[in-house]
Image 1 (cartoon, one colour):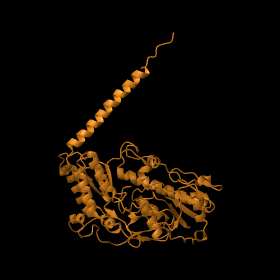
Image 2 (cartoon, helix red, strand yellow):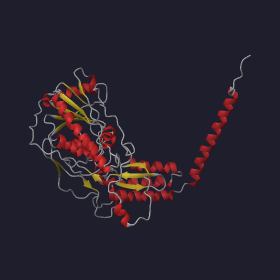
Image 3 (cartoon, rainbow, N blue to C red):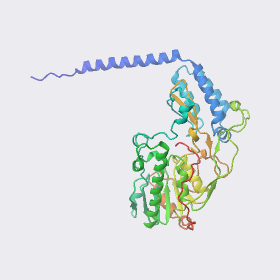
Image 4 (cartoon, rainbow, N blue to C red):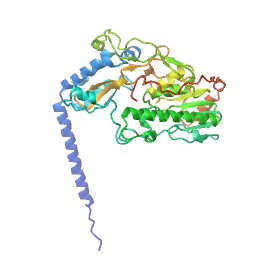
Length: 433
């Protein structure tokens, strides 16, 4: 005699699934009906007004996008206001706000989960004065927010017949022919967990830990450059494809590679001299950016003294674009690959943040702008000197062909500069990735 099946019979199972589906559909319809019935456009419009005010006064790229990308701010404002009034649900209202932000096409202007507000205690000014200027990083690197990213090559250099890989943890490197290849996947110290573990000490502060990790990474970069030279590399290709940026550490990497003093236009901060609220009506107002100041200069250390190339793609962004601009505009490096993303300058001291009251999101916006030679805002991306499409099966062959061009093979070697002390470069700004 067959043993009874302890499970539900097929007819009963299907009845159960139909009932469960009916309950779920009922709950969804009830939630939608409640959302529609209880929607009130007024708080959404109030949040939108605050967002427009903050953008008018603090969004560094607003004037550029309106003038050079010909975004009609008045028309966009009318469309968004109508959409919020006619949304009839929180979901549609949120989509309207998100659509407003996305119309600017700026990677640094975005919606983020709301920050947890700091507790509002009744601490006295004396208490505030005794607070540590560098709060403790945590019990270990993980609790300090460090994690290990994938630092590997995006192109299959290891498949080349004459590839000679070098050992290393943080910066994969190797050589084919006379070309040394150095991979820098991130310019943010918090993406190098292994380096953090090498320098972590109990009780260390957050900033002190960041600087220790940075020094460790800089030393490793210098050793890798020397190993490439000793291995026979005479030309250097620095691969920053997919590098989405990081911190002001990028300035120290630039100085490590630069043979002499470099110069470029300093970032300009959002600092208008008037109330710019009428910009949303298409009326002329004062500029959002402060006037241009003196150019910035970086003193090169010349750790690499041969021809230098930088490989970029459409995901090279933010601090990585700063890296590219310094070395390209000063004719230190030849840039190969694709136009960069166009994130440009990021958030100095956190940028500008508008907290929304109707949804648990903030709108963050860049408060600085960087300009290339010729006055082009970096958010338009940086064009390579030698365009190479690299993200398909033939990408590696195109890159090899580009590097084999006589003009790139005959690049003059930079004579070694006088020895410079290996001192850290003071941070210029602290943009987020």
